[in-house]
Length: 462
Ligand SMILES: NC(=O)c1ccc[n+]([C@@H]2O[C@H](COP(=O)([O-])OP(=O)(O)OC[C@H]3O[C@@H](n4cnc5c(N)ncnc54)[C@H](O)[C@@H]3O)[C@@H](O)[C@H]2O)c1
Image (cartoon, rainbow, N blue to C red; front, side, top):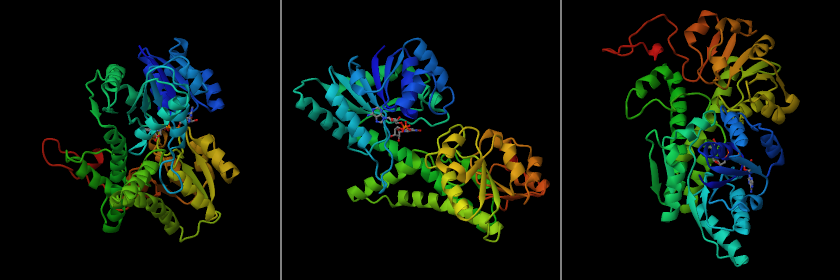
């Protein structure tokens, strides 16, 4: 059992705090947004993350989780470990805005009373931990304090929508350390999370910081690669889903992050890809491949809009366009950099009326678009009011729709930004189905064996 402080009650901070509290540690969460604190003190998680509210409520009840709104108050309790989980959003030029990281470090230096390991969990450029160390030391020097401390890097790999499971059962824990004491503390801390056999990988602080960017950039690269391949598939008469299936069976490639669509979004990939490009530029090592990943991602949204415009001969003024899905991916209400934002803005600028529904992200979008977009209570309510449907997030609710419902669409067309539906089924109901890379998906009833051998399967069964 350790006394731990976690700075920032966002997606990473709250999940970290709740999971560490579940393992019997006493965790104080510091959040400076008073609205978030009030909500948490009432046992309410300020965002949608499956399973998190349950963990938080039980940890509050057992007094393993405490919420305060300033670092000084938390450090009065002399925690041995301090996690920094503040945001690192993109600046205008694409570089990471580290002001929250610096402020947290300064506040720690101003109040630190005993030895502590300061663990940076935010995604930060290489060199940040060194700078954090200097800032804390400068504050200690100012008050002539001889308190010892260590700084480590421990990037977080959880994914929103399944964050609790990812934290409780990680693929791996990466720790960047430069002293044995930090290594020991981190090993003790994470021991209860490794019983399923995941490794704790120890490396230099710089390598740990870069590992996070390299991982996100690799995943983003796979997405952009498949998105560009999808446009080529349409141009050449192939079906990107069949291509994907053929590729994914190669063990060296695998199937993750190969779904073509309208591009990645969220609070991590867009900003981390841009920050990695900037890290390259600042060291004179241009990351041209990563630059292209970002550019392809932007172009993909335009390619989708072009398909809508092509269908309507370039005029969508006064069209009533229904949107299913606003969050950047299913199982989250996070709309940061969601492709839906750019796509809706474009549709509105071209004079269309937008009527939208999302199972959990609507209030966040409503705060952004106000009255410019009409929001409905249910997915069915959208269908009744619109000329066509645009699907932007592959929520389960949308995947399992009865396709006959699409027949109420006045223009009989579904623009499927996530390749959610089988083209032959929509064709059966007379619906035009515009996809990303599946325009040449076979609508004929041909049951071709996809692989010959003991595990012969049809492509559509995979
Ligand atoms: N969201 C994800 O899926 C995810 C996954 C892995 C890594 N990350 C990285 O983790 C970091 C945090 O991401 P997030 O999505 O949790 O951010 P977030 O914006 O949801 O949360 C950050 C929180 O920190 C609080 N904060 C900032 N400065 C503070 C201070 N001095 N004292 C107290 N509270 C303070 C903010 O008010 C905010 O609530 C980022 O660097 C991000 O790139 C995020």
